[in-house]
Image 1: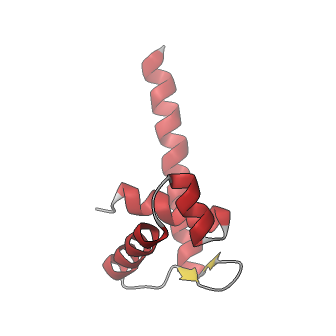
Image 2 (image 1 turned 90 degrees about the horizontal axis):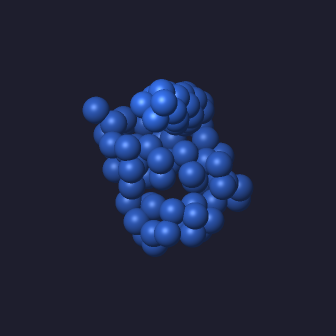
Image 3 (image 1 turned 180 degrees about the horizontal axis):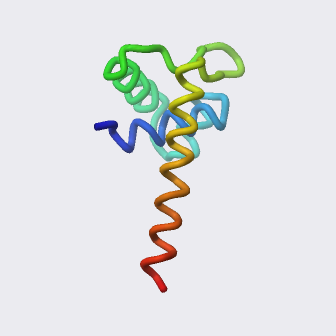
Length: 84
């Protein structure tokens, strides 16, 4: 099972195109961002981000980013349904 904090951190880095901006948005240190991304990449045995400026997802990263976005939509839909 994929770790939700790692997934959200990965998606935030991809969206912000920066480890520093992602850390700021998530209110965690840049080191924590790096550790989460490294752990996620190790668990999947693939590189997810091209660490240049700007940071961009690899082909595998694009697949995972679509997954995270789908999870976000499903969660939001479920929460809406539960609140009615």
